[in-house]
Length: 258
Image 1 (cartoon, helix red, strand yellow):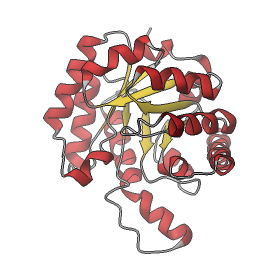
Image 2 (cartoon, helix red, strand yellow):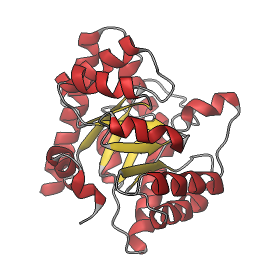
Image 3 (tube, one colour):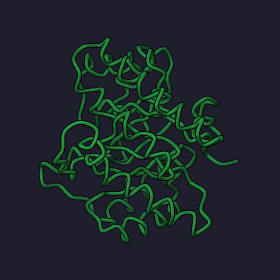
Image 4 (cartoon, one colour):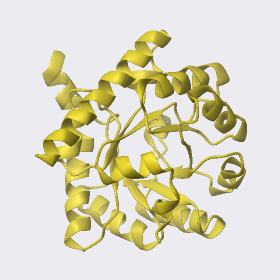
């Protein structure tokens, strides 16, 4: 039995069906009111997972406000994870690193690999997702993904929204925004498949309802969406966005089954 088998049934099935939707409150977002809004939107909109900053109180808040949607916690300090897991988090995530790039903070492959090993040693039985930094060349991203799985990662997550420089408006701009993370998803998934490694890839950062189907076509088992939801102040608008994301994934899953 793999660690993924411990996940709640619906979340596990969505990953298997390549239609999992993770709504991200933000690794640096420790505002309870903001996290509560995101959690409620995730619950009402049909998300499968909520990603919050690694704080036990935020975990409990997200579970309560969402009506029981599973919670993942994100951090770059492994020592923070055990308390959050004790509070009810079903998954831990090393990354996403987008929040650190504006500060000039970059993560090397060796550093991410060491964080993964430390986390696995602390939590040998807990599901762990690890982000591959998009600042690495693509071949290094592929190799790191393989090394992370060998070190105990159960899921691999991509990123790239902060490096995208869309030049166009409308739909074309949305595609340009998502291009880096879509490319990483395709390349990493191909490398894993070639190595005979069966690990879900989550495509995150810079996505929208327009580009979610592209992420699934690129090989993702699910997607992570943050700013498209958490930057909004109107809760009804947040719910509407999550529902549109859920519908886009549902359409993608239906097409895959044809």
